[in-house]
Image 1 (cartoon, rainbow over the protein chains, first blue to last red):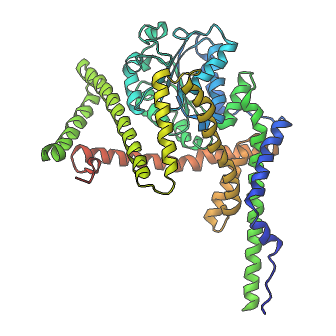
Image 2 (cartoon, rainbow over the protein chains, first blue to last red):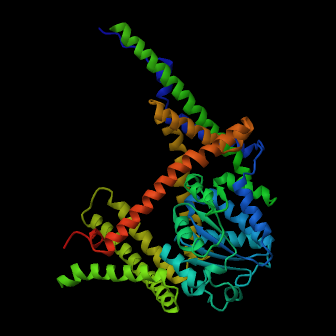
Image 3 (cartoon, rainbow over the protein chains, first blue to last red):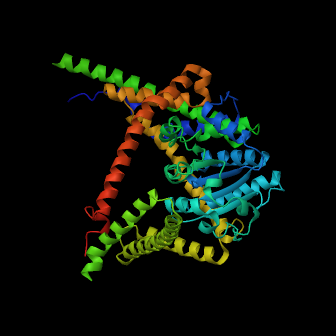
Length: 287
Length: 210
């Protein structure tokens, strides 16, 4: 009877039950959240540039915050959105917020409600206009070049936009002094093609980490002047405005999960390499 | 009837395509007015497209329910969820504090966030099993991925500031060169397709069936 060879430690390790990996991920997320380590967060030049631009705009400047994401990207983009909005309010700029993703408007409404606790005087129609969602993506962007109030006759709350004081002074995309687009996909490409480039408006992109690499060509070509990349970008921005919040507190968790995946990949590769060597040796000996 | 099915869409695409092409280079009031009117029309057409999408969704799931296909219960849930959300939205709007707003905040947001969050687990497991340096190209990809992954979070900076610098270099050079090539390729292909549609060479957008 042929003797069945027991799998070696390396073979067993490479066949590790996925539930063990899942448990490690849970621990890597939960432990730093419960016991923060306070790892230092370095502010990158791409994020600093966005902050500096908003900081340097004169009071009352017209800003557009494009919200093109939905709850799936909320952990990364929601803290970013709140941090940027907070900065805009602090600097007393005027803000117009269109949404081109159907499941995005309620996230903005929630952020506005939360921010109003700290800034009760921040008034809809005067300091900001939340336009809500309009179907059509690129078509809406093209149309906003002509008129915001024509493209969005009513804001999210059902008020007529045309009669709003802010829309009376800021009704065309060309009147935008600075734009920040929050992107979980490729809608940002349409903003650049149909709005910021034709009307020569400076823009920054706040994007999920997975989308960030797509925006680097635009950064180098100076078609965008900054990138807030993923949760880290949000954390950097929170530090810049001196209001550390959700993103900063989640950075330790993200660091540890990344480190875990890093270590796991390296160990798996070393073991796979060793195992391949053993098998080659075994094959030579048998031959 | 044959004219409206075959020739008219091609003619329409040609006329509109040429008008918009010419409009781009003519900075007159008439040209601007045409462009604005066109943008309004596009939004209306996009609205109709949404209606078609809804009709298609309902048709697909009703078919599954009628035929009692395996898992047709999910189609029932889809239709019921769709209709009740539609009714609640029409009656109360989708603002926070309304029933539809409540469903959005306490059902939709957690469910979608959960779906996305499970990716972290799958990625960790898949990385462990599949991310192997079996060739030199795979090794280069692996190393770039590892450096960017660790260099973009504070722990990378904590281990060594060079990790973050190298991660930025990868994103700003090899990554950007690759993406720029893709973007240029896509842009050229889009131009080619647009020209083919305008001149009626490309007709697949009209659909293949009768």
